[in-house]
Length: 539
Image 1 (cartoon, rainbow, N blue to C red):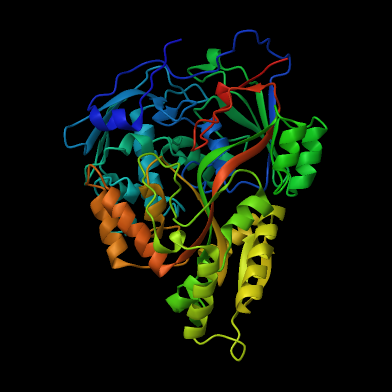
Image 2 (spheres, helix red, strand yellow):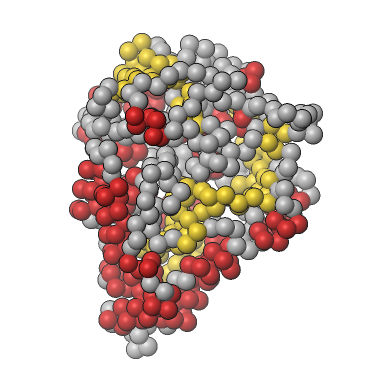
């Protein structure tokens, strides 16, 4: 089957995207399909939502990509391929994008998916009444009129998104954005069924009410236990789908999840911290590790609610310098993760990892600098530094927090009081700046450095530490209009290394136990935007 693909470089060079068939499950030569096409996998926590404009976590986004389909999708290598849109064109300035929608796209109730459904969804995303955690993403997309709408100064109908007709969507931007099409693979841009939302309100995503346009429909949801989705016969490419049912099981303990995986209850689960070498030796065809487009970090609360100590950059630098990241990646995690001294991972397309000063030092030199910095800030035996360190419940997060706190205690005499919270409580606590130092993680919403660096601009909805830098804001705004923003991104990373609003700890690897008969997993897609419709289970 001929596939429509484009790399980021191609999208930057060509003004017109050609249309073609979408990626789908392709059975490899020699494979026989198993009779039971049920894919079962583990998630750590209950997902935040399955509403495209409300969901804010990775596990929820995985479900949303099955239930809904946006304008564009990704193939196994992360290249853009058609979704509801068969293709798009853009003008020379790359500030007007016109998407052509397929005529056979339908909602699960049989109604056609139209350009108006995208207009409604995007207006809903930035409407203050929706209170979307991702409303700021609309501003990152530079959609015309988005600022006044977000501020409540203009009606959402003024947003620069227009249904020219049922199958033509026009998007007008305030900046030249060569990577705009990449952003439409993000769940917040997926269509929403207006009539269903208006009829059921917040209950519209319950299995008995939900109407979706993706390859699957939600058939069961037991909070904190499981979520089930099954094939949607109305999906335009249903004939190419093989997986019949997808089950996400909430298993909070990673070792329990591994036990259930080895007992044959799961097709996929995360490898517990420190166990990859053993599992890879025992199960070489099941234990896998590959680079991910994600960063693991701790964020300082620099808001009015934060501790006074953290307002001193010397304290922030000292705590960051004293972390021996190699111990965390090589001794605690042992799964192929990468030490992080920048916020943006090296796996990011087109990103050149800059050499920030503290990354070039030996750990011994960093430790010595940390001791001196903390003493200069006035902390020591006579005035010990103590603070609370918050993470969401996970054995892996706990191990990392313990390792970091022990490093601080041994090297600096600093006491970090550890506390954990369940996922939704943790998100609320961190979002309300009701913390001192808190775990953070970010996986790219699209494969470009701005998806990470925009997070630490003053207007970002996920800047939970409330770091503010006029220079960072200016550089990131300028970057949107540049053909090559490398210099801006390098400077922002240098500012972050100097100001240290967050402590970069490591860049992720995907470290999974993965049954050998689960085929087509997109390990070459660093964003890990996977779609169950592309998978199959062999005998």
